[in-house]
Amino acid sequence: MLKDLNNHRTILLRYALLQLHDEAVAEDAVQETLLAALQTGDSFRSESAVRTWLIGILKHKIADHYRATERHYSMESSNDDEDQNEALEQLIFNGKGRWIGAPSAWNNPDHALEQDEFWAVFEWCQKNLSEQHGRAFMLREIVGLETEEICEDMNISHSACRVYLHRARLGLRECLEQRWFNAKREL
Image (cartoon, rainbow, N blue to C red; front, side, top):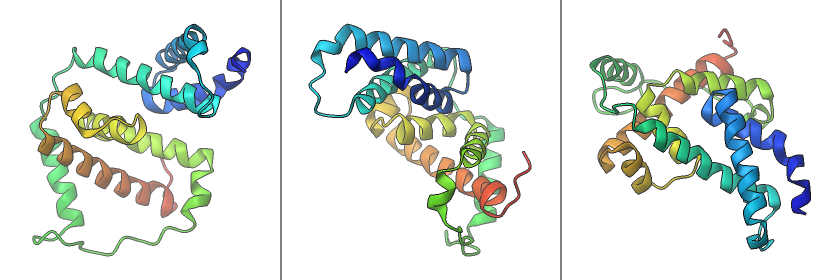
């Protein structure tokens, strides 16, 4: 079972690339994942699929990468990011916090998820979020960290984390509607 770890490399690399946006860093994370699996393979109890186990290890390697890079960046919001987010919210919500217009209907979103092109657009949209919002979203929704862990990682309060996640989701939704679901796919 563990001798076939290399068969999972392609899936692991794709997952890591989606999270890390850097081929060399993603490759390193996958190598570290496979090495950790080989070193701790005796502890694998077959309670889950090997791929699920490997992705769990990879999630931790990705989180470790972001923890290490976190030390090099200040996570304070810039005025430009705040102004941009306020402008986005004014386009989507009225003064009472209600939707200005109903979101457009998404034609068969399940089919879109299966398409590589969709994931390319999603990745582009995620990269174009502010650094703080994109990072919080990635740690929560893709790496799977709990809110407390994100707050500790990013050195932010729970309320700031909720705001970051809310704004990231709004930004992703707006971008995906414009660039994918409404067929405006010019990157």
